[in-house]
Length: 134
Picture 1: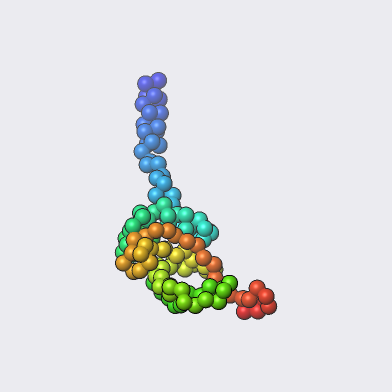
Picture 2: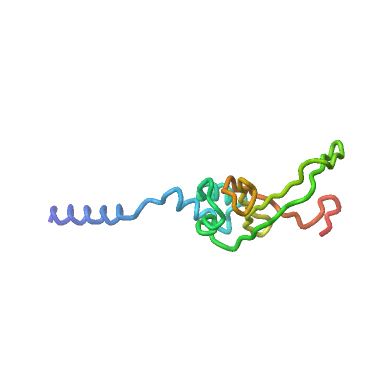
């Protein structure tokens, strides 16, 4: 009888040990997908999940869809001196949007063919802070 109890306890222990421990990538993916995660937490998770230098296709494979390409371009202006003869900016970001903002994937060079450098959270403001009007 004692031998039977020992075998049963050993079997239960082995069944409990059969569960694979959660990896850091699994935990980061869980944060990325959670509706309860903040934008900052999602950006941190993306930095852990996406390897530096990855292209947009790899980012989409890892983080999923939907995401959109956003192109920011135009002349540069020095707000202090008013100078406008500065080098124009031309930046592409792959953005994931969530309720009040999103996470932008930045690239170097900052084009659709660049390699991943960082994930940056951003907020979208829907009303003017001065007038409190939408």
